Image (cartoon, rainbow, N blue to C red; front, top):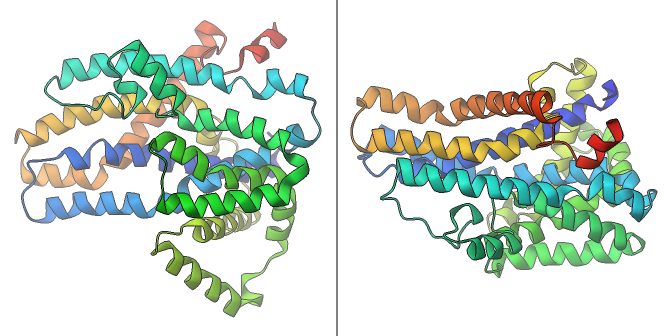
Length: 353
């Protein structure tokens, strides 16, 4: 990757870190039933609420960057050439969907047979192949990000001549769906994030150029007004504006940091950003295993309160470290044993043979 684009890759790394932390929180803290009133319970609730308030800053910028990085394929590359390069996402949705389903089924039976799961809530918890197929079709899977990339690419490449009206419609849908959500959480997420991917795919280069020249100090009152308005809308359940603002702010911050100290290829966020598929596809299995073990120990009172407090404070960061190292390890193993079949498109493998 060219050095001038490493800072963009770092943003991808930040986003995948936030995704791992998000899943670490939702699979752990809400299930700690033995925490009594006091500091431990307060810390657990703090992580849950922090996770909730990070939502506008997590996936919108992730999808904007994803759309921006495939601008050339949207506008210049023919459909036939795009199939090999960009439409293999469905392969990973099915492959890792099956791997997650099998792994989590056995993990739950082994570590928490008494824990009740809703088979329809996630394809990974399905109790039959038919239920798994239905959940996958509805995007009710932890891999909905990959599912979305396939749908988005086809949609925005096909509709690229109608950019303005389509984006206006998608903004309206984003607002409406906040009040009238779809019945399936995965598809709900796919639909809500369409506008951010489309913004990156259709107007990413223009917005990048504008962002680089923009100076917050030259328009302090406008910036303050936009910030206050976006917060006000967010607290009435309209996160669209604050998500758009967060995209600009995060891009600007990383761009300025790169100018101050150029991003390095071996930097943590760049390494993570270069291996998003490996970390994204493997982390949920690891997180569920770690959470089930720790939940059982904490709920049974096996740890003293001081140790529980320490665990509650750092658990998401420890999970992030474990999932990152494991994802990178699985990637190296895939390269060594299977020519990276589990994380690189088969077309790319064929081209290199």
